[in-house]
Image (cartoon, rainbow, N blue to C red; front, side, top):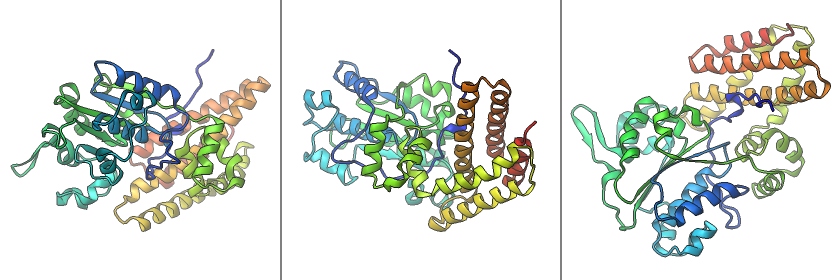
Length: 379
């Protein structure tokens, strides 16, 4: 059976939503992942470093937080472990509820805004910088002869272990990942580290080899419907969003929040003409305007946001729509045994992969989209 051809553009954009807990259900539709974690917790030797990987919104951060509750709460019992649901109402649970547990450290790029380091506070939130990682976890030199204490090596305040969760771990640059290696290999006793990521391939092989991996899959139809109902997404949007999100609540939230259905309708009209051989040089420019307006809105909502990062997010939203169109075209070509159409889908998939790579290399977005649309036409 041929491997399904997928691109990094299938991975959703890195826009974050606050974690949601609905009716006490921490994670929906992740039976296999939860079973793996429960079994590991019940064993005599629980690994100290983990990677939770999978599509956005599939419960990675929520599962990591629930794991932390179970590890840090002295009142957790084997029954709690077996159900992968920590007790509520205990001292530890109440501290986690209000974000004040001294031994639970959740590291995300947005914490740069409240950093004690002026240079970190003033920079745009495009990644998790090494100095922020040193401040919140590793300690060590930060320049000018200064050095930070290491939270990871401090004694647990409540005496029942420490947990460090790095959300969007793919945003750690090479320096940050290399700085993390030694701690992953030889952490202090009773210290546990969880890296949550939607793009595991951006983590160094040396990082991945030091961690146990747990995959979080896309949700099935029933779980997605339950999620959309609890997320209060309008029911008339469900059919389109369900098909577009492909089991990812994170992508579903993006679709609802940014009205991607209207983006899809506009894009379909433009691509229909290109794919029939009617090249229109204004298509790339109009898409660039759409992305630029989106990015301006993101920066207006959060002045700390990077316009460059917002442009990349806007492009990735477009790329998700391109990818969905290609998946549908591939399916039709396979059913109809149309090898020419299938080859054209493969060519356009390669164009998308190349475009994302060029965007990450800081190629001008307007030029990138103009070139992509020129090459998208029938060959």
